[in-house]
Image (cartoon, rainbow, N blue to C red):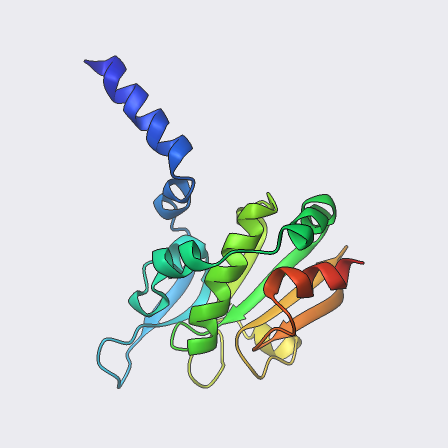
Length: 173
């Protein structure tokens, strides 16, 4: 009886890579009350599994619907692992609802270690729990900062020029 359960578990883990992600939940954030019914506002450090549970993201549908550009993904697979990402987002923000799940899918496709992405959720005043948004002069969300050896080499602010993966690949060229 134990063997079939083990086989089922291994099959689920291999078939659904999001399963491992969703099982995590190590963020250091607080939930802020909202005046809008049903809205969830996080403030602080979180991860993809934390925000994937926020209903406004429509996480599964948004991730499934996004098809990253293969040529850009090839560049990211080759180069992105040497870079660090810091993402400022708003769980209340429509641009974050669209862009952050796309970023997640791009990073997954590029085999980037998702546990190396730092997500900072900001409240509606664009203030975080640890004030790191001030250090990087974040005025809009989402803002994706890309670092190489601790040096900021580029950022995506609120919207993309071409696509998440193409914009990231351009930074790395």
